[in-house]
Amino acid sequence: MALYIKHDLESRIIEWHNEHAYSNNNETYFPSVTTILGIIAKGEHLIKWYQTNGLNANYLMREAQDFGKKIHRLTEEFDTNLDKPINVREYNADGKVVFEHDNRTWEFLSRYIDFRKRFPIKILAIEQSLCSETLKVGGTIDRVFELNGERYLVDLKTGPNIYKEYSLQLYAYKLLWDEFFPNYGIDKIAIMHLDSGTHSFGKKDDIQGYGWKLKTIPLDIPYLKKGWDASFNLFDWDSPDWKPFFQKYPDHYCAAELGIKNNIDEAVTQ
Image (spheres, rainbow, N blue to C red):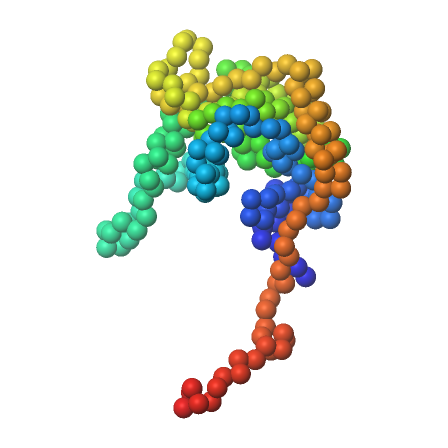
């Protein structure tokens, strides 16, 4: 028997370091939506950012990814455990602080909670992972909720920039959702941008606050379909036999079974 670093059969997602794939049967694997969209060039501004940051660029990128995962985890915890408080710091029995969220983390969580307090929503899905053998892709949808009589499919973003391919990511998630939940059609796709730079509540119909904004993406199906199909076909052309690389490990180790001996020098032990 071999184990993956993480393989959640219920969520159908398999992760290894920064790579992940989706499977319904642990035999056939499909790339994630974001893996496919990685084929799109990120533009001149990102190239300049890499050039400016030099050797620190990869570290800063991983740091941003880790921060995004942390905010996703905290917002999920808030939405799924309504009676459990999330504390900015934790204390031991002696009253000593043993853990504390940094200011940036607490600020971003507060922005999401500001949305939850001001806009009553009915949540239909939280971190819903889906894998389609028809579409040959998998993905995890951050939120699906009803607001003001409309059904939103939403992705949380913690970075300062909104990239064009995010609209294709949301469209692909909509395709996945429609396949599995055809009776719960999506009216709008949107980004919950938690680093939007906004400084007001906006106009009457705006859904935003200080530092955050629910940014709706025009649901132009032909336009989005063209972009997604082109990305998928280019990825398939570039990686026609794509398979995830996951290092497998045994489910146990035993030195004796492996024939490993310590060969301790008796002189050292005397």
